[in-house]
Length: 101
Ligand SMILES: [Zn+2]
Image (cartoon, rainbow, N blue to C red; front, side, top):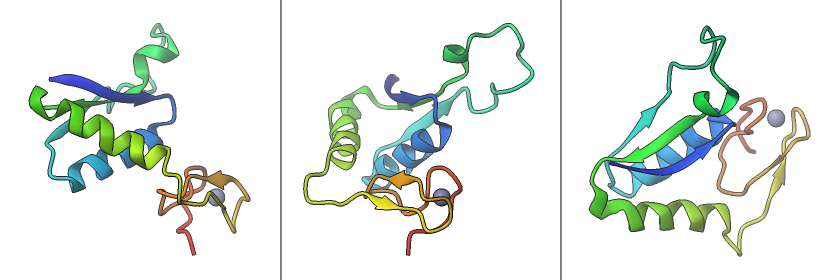
């Protein structure tokens, strides 16, 4: 198991998980239920973490995420509902989860 992605925005990590899974790579989430209730943990400890199950998939999984995060020919979009700027790879607003139209 190797950690491939983590972010304080849990929605971004979930999005990354979907991308990697859609590429046929087995992944698992850690800290999925850690937020809230654990008063003494620093924010870092409760970041949602995306781990690849098979280490041999690590490079491919990282590429999937990086290419989606830095896609050159894709446009950022602004949410119709809350006006937040979203990465082109997102189908839903990261902030309010309104579907991109
Ligand atoms: Zn929004």
